Length: 485
Image (cartoon, rainbow, N blue to C red; front, side, top):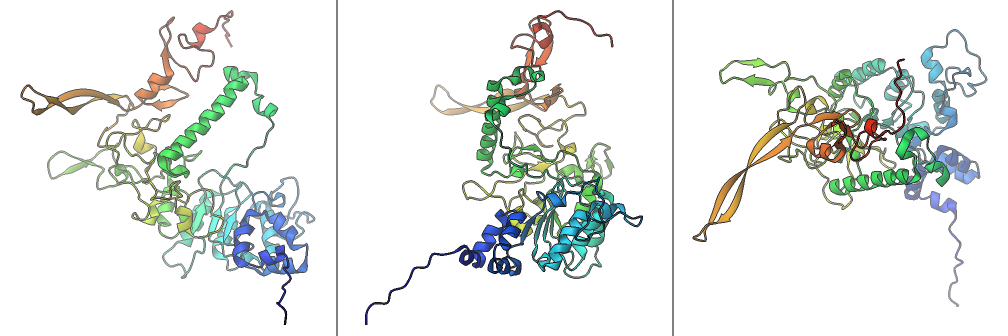
């Protein structure tokens, strides 16, 4: 009997997608339109995509055109053909703006795939508070991570009420199903592909920055700055780097109370500031007696931390009074959800875990609110000083602090002797330039110049018509005219 000869049949796409592991790793990278188009190619692929719980585990509807709410077109309360229906008087505002999303989820529910969606991204779409409430309460939804960053028509007051109701002590067991919400941070920007001619073109109002060389230099400076910050922090997550302000709009104090109520139940892409001024036990000035009086500038209401300070801590002591959050040691409530939204995992632990470049332990997390950093944070280089190293002042002026350094010297007998030396270190920030914000003395020496003609100080970076020796007014050689109106 001769040897058995096996015919090598090439592996098809059907065989690959039939593997659960491959489908789970591949499906989140495909747009929903491509996934639906693939399901229409054959009955076998349709059965795999529609019946497998891994295909629609991650659902991103932000690039879907049918999910955008056009104001000029009428829509119904969520039917399949909502563009063909006419508006009636019973249509509410929430039904109007959430009509496209309700239509999409109605079709997904009919196809029996809605229950498989665990991570839902609705960034930039028209999302109402009523629709978010349905995602958290109705049984047909099984969403764990929800991203609603920069959405439209969202009533935040209603959303706060619904969140308070969802985390009430008398809530049913296993509710709410949503464990993490991306709400405060900016959404991921789509990559822009532009030609070199369009990239170098700019309006003439930019002055010196209108030249192609200046634009290329500014672009490379920004890339080098990001690479340096990532190398110092050993991670590309902006919360663990010296990123400064993490939110374009400062959240209201009501959201801080919501985060307190949801602590341990629902995680957000923001955390509460743990500065000592938010602790009622520490926000008192004691005069040595048994009695203590509150100071009007000491205690602060709960606030959301909006400033990422980097992994080095205070510029002087490299720490902070409240101790930094260390991943794996500190409570999970001290860590925000990191961007981007995880593709293959739907747990809050996976969304909070930072990814280091060297694979070692993540750096410590230093975050504060702006009120806790008033007068002690440089908005350009992001240096900062804590309450123990510099108390700050209401006028946000720099303060000269004397520090003692011990210098080793050898006397005539050959023995080592320590001699103290007084050195002056300037800490604190001041607003020398309106465009730069509050800056430290090091940033002032780099960018602030004194005009040799008029003697006034000016910023070399914000005044485009200035030079290294003269301000923009003295450096302007054309005829000057005074505009009365």
